[in-house]
Each structure stands twice: as structure tokens, then as C-alpha cells.
Image (cartoon, rainbow, N blue to C red):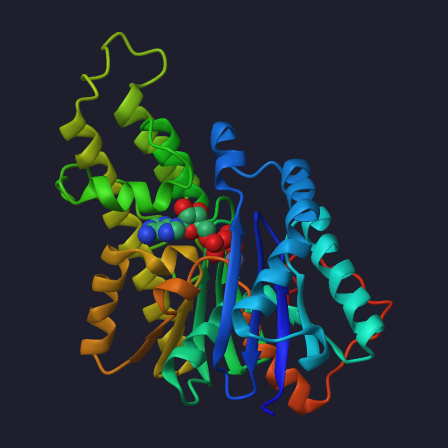
Length: 340
Ligand code: KG4
Ligand code: ZN
């Protein structure tokens, strides 16, 4: 029988489990979203997230096994994302994984969530994609890496304030759109003019591989709601103006992301680029990436269903399994970003 592993993801607000075989075939992938719980707050509330993980984790694991037609006894190993993320959320997944590993007496594999996001590109490609420059662009991260191998990353730079996805979520909230904001902005931007407003493109002409999205967020706020202290009332926020703001915001973010990828590729002399994380699902950003393809860069984007948080990208654990990189039962979660 083909070896299969169970991967568990609970780093933020998605409780997920997947069964993946050693040829990287995803036999099942179950995701319990908590979006409805966090919607009224416009972002993830950590304590609510941890409690929902506790409720969801066992049913999600059961469902993943059922959909794959497997039982616990069929598992070769247990993989779990242990970093980075919300501490309470990560602990729920890790506790479940440790318990199963102990109970079934099979190896425990600790996966880095960021590396897993980029491994989604490897899964889609069906062949090697590393070495490459990697961009993880999500609600929690906007990080550039030099990826020497699937689990050998050097952090080149990250955001100094908000993550790109967080900016999408915050801009959506101030335009009166629901959480998560990325897909909403993308949808409404389709009827807007991306040149209507010239929002700031932070660090775009700077050699530093850093991002900043708080300036653009403030600029959108002033455009939408008016300058604080100004005698002039803000123009009425008509549906067309909302669409124009959304399109112009999305345009600016897409431009910055692509420009920084180009700089990283050049600085490191790489010709392959891997992009993962929720914002990688953005259509305008994907179009903008075609510029890089046109200039000879091999661009790998995570497939749509593996962009936002999921457990299937835990397939990277097979790399750890093959390398014999097993974890002990006393491992802990690592909430923060570890700099290589
Ligand atoms: O990777 P992910 O599911 O969770 C984190 O690890 O953070 O990313 C979620 C983020 C949210 O901020 C969401 O608004 C954004 O990804 N997102 C998008 C799109 N789909 C999801 N942003 C822009 N365009 C999209 N189509
Ligand atoms: Zn993520």
C-alpha cells in the first residue's frame, strides 16, 4: 500500500487536515473556515480562533481520513505546522499531532507554515522548482526568501509594518466590504479604474528588500473618508468611487510586489520565482507577474486551492521524512518568524 501521511494546519484561523501520499498526491483536504466568527471584528481574534480550533480539530481529522478512504492505522507519519502563527492556535494542532504520533507510534514531522506555502508551487509543478526566490504574501506575512532547497530558506526581507493581505483586509473594512477583504477588493476592482488614484508604492525605487503597506492604507483612508481636520468634506463614496479606490489600491500593491520580486531575483542571480500565500490568489497580481515570465523568469504560483491556508501543502513533510528529520514529542510551537 502507498505510504500516506496526515498533515494538520491550525496556525491562524483555518482548521485543516489533509491526507497526502508519498508521490505528493492529495487524497483529501478538509478546511474548516472561521471567517464567519471573525467577520464582525474585521480580522482574526486569537482567543476566538484557538477555541474554534479545539472544537474543529477532531471532526476535521476524521473527515480527512474518511474522504481519503483511510483509517488511522494506514498512516505512515503525522505532519503538523508548528511555526509561525498564533501561539494558541498552533498549540491545538501540535497537541493533536503529538497525541496521534504517540498513540500510533509513528513519526512526528514539524512543518514550517511559510515553507509549506511555497512548497505548494512544487506540488503544482510536478517537478523541482528550487533553487528560487520565494515570496510568501498572506494575511500575516509579506516575506522574500532565497530558497536554496525545499527546506533551506534565507529570509531576504519582509514588511516593516502591515502584511499585504492585512492591507487588503483593512482597506476592505474601511470601504465597507466584508472580511476577508482580498477577494472582495478583487471583485469590486473589476468595475473600477486602476489609474483613478495614484496611491504610494513604498520602497519601489529602493534597493532594500523591504515592504511597507501602512502608508497606502492611510492614503486610501484619506481618499475614501477625507483628510482629518480638513474643512472640505470627502467626495461621496459612491459605488463607482469605491470600485476606483479598490482597483487603484490593488494596482499599487501588485506593482510593488512584482518590483520587489524582480529586485530579489536580480540581487541573487536567480531565474526561478515561487509565490504562495493568500494574496497569490489575486488575479491582477498574477497578470502583473506575466511581465517577469516575459523577461525569461520561470514563475511558479501556488494553485488557487493551495494559496490560502490549507493542510495539503503539508506535503512538504515528505521531504523531512525522506531526510529523516523527525521531531521529538517535547517540541514546542514557534509563533514568531525565524530569521535564517
Ligand atoms: O495565506 P492565508 O490564507 O492566511 C495567512 O497565512 O495569513 O492568507 C489570507 C489573506 C487574507 O488577508 C486575504 O484577504 C488574502 O489572503 N487574500 C487575497 C485574495 N484571496 C485571499 N488578497 C488579494 N486577492 C485575493 N484574491
Ligand atoms: Zn498562511
